[in-house]
Image 1 (cartoon, each protein chain N blue to C red):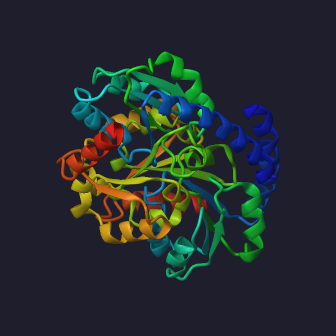
Image 2: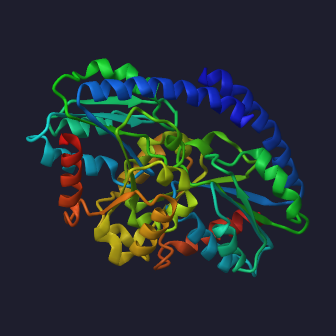
Image 3: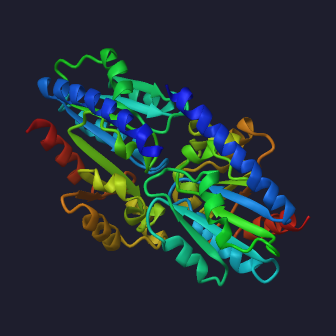
Length: 215
Length: 215
């Protein structure tokens, strides 16, 4: 039953995602799909990344949430266009939702588009949004066992950002074990351990995004 | 489309959940459905709760995970029966999955059954498992804005356990704000802030579960 329902849904999503991917490529835009559990720090990462990149690169944000407009409001304070998708209960963004709000952004001249997914480490993995880069966040407070327990999202990601590194001394998170088990699933994963609070590791992440958006 | 697919699925789930609820009531078992994001500390809470209650109450655990048998193995080390449901990608437990593994537990004589859901703050909210008590966990590292951003799970819960209280000084989590916004959604929510590390607040939670299982 599950497969019968999901296959046509995913096929329809992939068709729209292909259209979005072509549009992003045509405009020279790097679209970045950010996926993590609730509270892993997606909005904070975006706030600070945008702060550092907004003067160098024309960028915009699409923010998905189950309820509330809070995150888009937070990001608009950075002075960049931010469009909120409120999914009304749905547990992930899909390509159709992104396609629907895209006319509210001016794609011409844009170089970087962040798409912050709904906080969920399971469901968003299956839904391509036309992104050129898929970034998964894992906070050290979540535990180093998460890649093996929630493999789909790590398998389908290009980048793993390990957040809240400043809290590492207060947890039993094993950074080596987390990276090893993520690489066992997906050897091509680029890993950036960082803290948005102390800025440790932050420059490497920002440089990486800048390079990918301008290459 | 979403509603057309979901309504029959939820109706079918509710029918099985009613059957489970009746079975639990008949055997005098308190079934507790634990819901949270990945890494909020469900398994750690269970380990320590079981350690304190296992000599007073006959109890068992059902553990849901997308992949791996790790959690059931962790809990079996406490010397209590623990059955793993590996959902193979599905983002929540449903009543049918619980019904299928129930024959592997001996219900007679049992007083307390913990059901640890898949780590997901969105999808498990809609799926009753026949539980007498629904417990939602929120760790202080996830942020106090989560009740308003993910309301469904807080609306449908009986208890909110706020975990990792030992990390409170290292975060900007506002405990009062978290409790207020959770109570705004659901005034009858019982709230237990605690730390599994320092044991602060732990006794109140264990007492509460003991009382509910024996009343």
